[in-house]
Structure formats: C-alpha cells, structure tokens
Length: 187
Image (cartoon, rainbow, N blue to C red; front, top):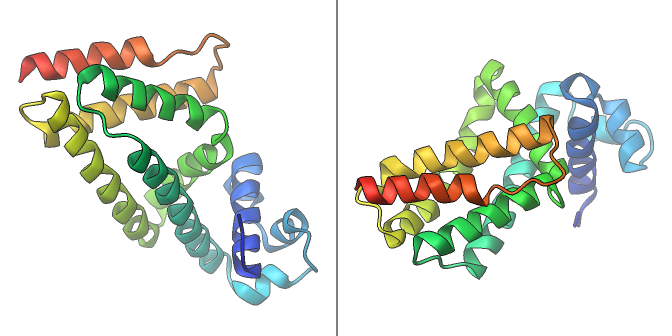
C-alpha cells in the first residue's frame, strides 16, 4: 500500500495508533513498526504534533480510498440495497479494515483535544456525507441531509460497540434495516 518512505512511516504510525493507542505513538515506536532505521520518523516529522498531522492526512487518504471503492462499486437505489451496502461496510470496518477503524476512533478523540486535526477529518466526512446523502435520496428519504446524519451515527455506534464488545454473530443488517425503514417511512 505504501509507496514512499513517508507513507511507510505513516502507515506504521496508523498501526501503532490502532494497536497501542495515542500514547503509544512515538517516533521510536513508529520506526520499529515500520522496520526503518531509528530516527527515520523524526526526519520526516520533527515533532509529535507534526507526526499526528501526517497520520491524519494519511488516514484520510486511506479512508477516502476505501469509501471511494465502496461508492464506485455500489449504487444503492432502494432501502434494501442501501442496508446491504452499509451492512457490508460495517462488517468490513470491524473485520478487514479493523486497524483503520480503530485508528479512526483514536483520531476522533485526539481531534477533540487538538482542533487543527479536525479540518482534514471534516473534508473526508463531507465527501462521505455527499455520497451517503445521494444514497438516502435514492432510497426514498424526503430529507436525506437530515437522515444521513442519523444513519451515519448508527453505523458508527454499531461499529464501536462491535469493536468494544465483539459478538461472534455480529449482523448490523437488522438494526440498519429498521432505521432506514423508519427514516424512509417518516418522510
């Protein structure tokens, strides 16, 4: 995935963030995770703040790419199709994309204390909201801008709860179906 040394370091920082939390993200830990000589991370990011800004930028690239892949492959036109796409997204978020998801939650908390990190996160969120709003509209929502906020919050809650309290029979479909049905019906 990483094509440059900088991306290699940032991908390693995302792994450290996902596996050790915010406190674990140090230049030395990132160097070790990346398998690069000690001091490499520091050469690219002189301070921890600069490293976090880089992490947020790289995270945003990877998250945007994941959602673009989803958006390019999916064009839900009915409530059922929308539920299927979002259920698949949620299952992948706690499965194959688990590391990136854990990093996202850690970054969100960090952005609450470091306002400069919010801008890049807001850009990605706006793009995702745009696609999701169109999907809600196509599924029959009378107020897709409002309804996509409810739906996004539900997806995030389901994801967070599955990460914190893993259920081997996790199936977000029924919960998402009930919410989408209520939103579309409510119109």
